[in-house]
Image (cartoon, rainbow, N blue to C red):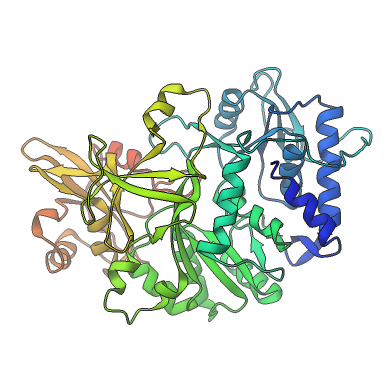
Length: 509
């Protein structure tokens, strides 16, 4: 089934229901949304010769037209290749070339230098269209296993890979959302404050299926104060936010005395949410937070932690459950494996493996990586974690990030959790550094809160009162900010490379 059928159906069921919003202003109902997608699909086919299965890339910031063009691509039977607009044009050109894209849409059609794109790929402005084409009355027939979305991983450790997501993957992911994450009603509004090319964009499908509103901030990105104004005006607003975005929202909300009016749900994921930050978010916004864990390879759909559990701080086991990423989504199984691939019992950490309807087809033009990641029907995530007896999954780290010091495994996440609780710490990231005697030692990169003064002695005193001394950092590197990729994930590789020149000094305001 072609996922674009959901928009066709919404346009027929609820033609006058408001669909697309630029800020608080409605710009299209569902009849218009579907009609524009059908018109643009005809342009792709009749004017540009796009055939089913061919790739069309999008390299632009969020907009209502972005959603229309996504559906036009699927309507034509083609494959969408959304590229994060924060990437450098050279990176975007590499992705377009690797995807063998025929077209790449940009805001103004003037992003790439001559010869930057490999023929036959051509750059087109988002608004570009020729003579009116006869709209395609219905989406091109597609099978569930046909490729729909070619998602390029964030590439924190090297060149990104193209994750092949089928129409079936996307529909399974979407149908899990109202069961495992958050029910969706017609009066809801999903706000695209994070890039549509990533997780935020993947949540469009279920909101189309339910005839909800789609809101793109006028800034076309994330500004906490703008988001709060939209929520207050539109009501029933939901959004996907990385933990760093949640932290910024908390800071802005406290500065302006905002307590979450108009916000229905904040779905957070994509990076660790430390307990100290979660407590602050709950104190600020109340029971509006839901956690998800997923990867591009099983998009947004491995496990979920519901709002009622997150908000129940009086539970004796709250800290343990809130530190987890919840239980498996309805359409997947989770297994913990040892290095030989054998399942491990509850409580023992190992590599997280996932099997189910959302797991990718494989990596685009990369058979070796596909063989390494998909083993006997299981996706090997590269993440380390454990399941408890009730099925709650707790992440410890990426397998490559585990620090082995003196023969003992030290998980950066547990060290970060302790340091993040210090009242003067705004942000922290822990990595391993080669050590001639112990193999590796623990290094903490720390960002202090505004006006705070921190030093190594102060933090070590805090740490040893809360965790075994052998896990404490041997070095602290104080930074004003941490390096991030275009999706907001901390670049641990860059931090490791910087250790040769890093100096441990205290930061003064």
